[in-house]
Image (cartoon, rainbow over all chains, first blue to last red; front, top):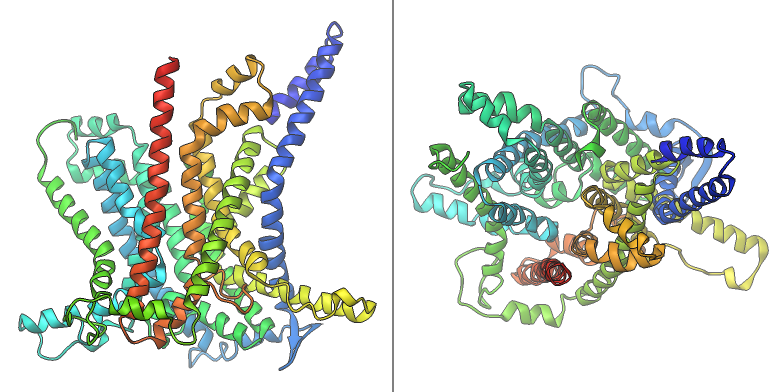
Length: 318
Length: 296
């Protein structure tokens, strides 16, 4: 719209017969654009004050020195050296790398589970449910928990997974196991389970959105050409659902990479994660150290999603 | 597909979907049941009788934790975040339709705000307010002005925490507004303008009524995301916690079904809000359809 307005302006000005209308057109366009700025201003201000400036400050403070009492605005790279302390030693893995590997493991496991579950659920709702109303109802059924408290949804695994929980009781009652399985709660397993429980919705929504746009005649064409159900799924549906898969993957990856709440609650406060390191340093008032860790985390996350964002233009998807 | 008989794949997928729904809702239903545990009951099954004992204990308060104060703070903040999210996202959506210089940058920032890890955003806002406090202290010491002395901290529910919540709700709001405006027929506005309506009149009598159901959806996102927000609030709140922060602390200290009672209560509250929003949205759609029939 800007382009047409801009090209219309000189064209109108060149017509000498209608100078009045040209003048009013420019005035109108100018007013319209001023209005657009005014309408976008509140959002721009919020993001400036609470997102752009804080991120810039984080980068700046990550290069500052500190002692037990205060932070000192003097340039140093010590915070980054501290983050990677011992990492040049090839014999032993340093704490930072170990923490990242642990977080990365959660990330990959969660990504695989949420992708498989999310894709299957979205595929069922989009292609196998025929009525639009039922589709919307099932879609809502999947999204409602997203609007309720995450912490409560984590706690609600305790009666199921605990030492005397429902799972252990049932298995023992059936005679499958003799003694309760210990590692169900407060373990890597419960962390991944909670991640999948909380984040599958972030896969379902964008993948369903992509699938809803797939022209149904393409499926029929594939069928008419003799493709089997699996061939149609793999060669038609999956490629066309790729943007949704990419958006969902970005959500899941960033949510897991920066998490400290789920790992904390479901890991019994015993499992390390990058987000938790930052949180602990923050509460110990080691702000520059926390900032340096945050910058490293941000870099890692950005690297992971650059590849995914290259593939799609998010705005076309809406 | 089509209208033929259901394929075997349909039944397999339907079973998978049912399992997924059970996985999604099962745990929550478990604590719903266990929150009515008898006075002697513990955190797991079996039920030791049925009572509202733990709700009573919850009502009396959870020891030193001011849970009702936290709930009240979260509700108020959620309401403010909701109103701001609807207003700001709606007008930003209008601006993006007109096109303006810098729209690409604003959109990128909005999406970035959604995908930058919450702990990083929270840390940044926390840092910003600490530095602001120091700047104010410095100014107070330099100027000696009375009103600047002992200001405490600028960090608080309606400053840093509100901002932290908006960085999370506004991107959702904006994305919804994009989706909504993509399906909005500009002919309605043109008709209004042709009939002599001014810009504000067109907005009030044409655009807002048509978009009403979607705006309710944005409000739902604004309130519930704020009400449950934890990661972004954690470093960006002063001394007084919101409910999710208190809840996180309680997971390690409370060892009685009280915490389930609290879970039942907050989940019930969220469900009530969701129900209210969906109901309002449906009502607005119906009313519009009816009005369309009458005038058509």
